[in-house]
Image (cartoon, rainbow, N blue to C red; front, side, top):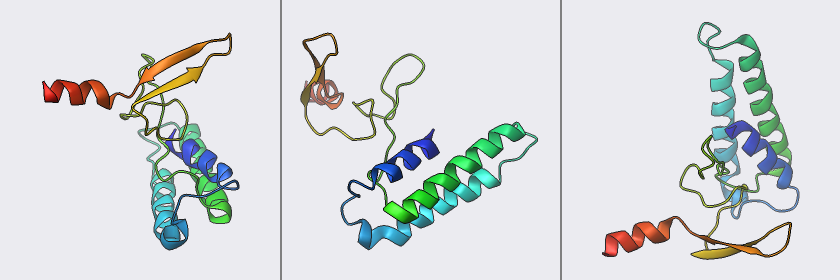
Length: 128
């Protein structure tokens, strides 16, 4: 999933890249190469061969497109888990991070849904 997120981030990089990517380009691509190499090193004894091929193909694409366009997001990990909870401390279902404490999502059927950033309840609890 992370490889797919970076591949999409690279495709989105056509429209605009991570700020200061020019300064960090080689470091970022180095990290992508490490992920690709790790996918290539997957042991067939622990994973199905088709899973390994899918992982390698995904990381190859993420690297090739990233070399061409850069990446839109430095850390595109914003998915929901199997219980429909936002994973990795992120408050969006997309690849862009959220910085607002409260945001409104427009619903397809009309109206809006208010979303409170997950950091708010934690901060309030800590403050007592």
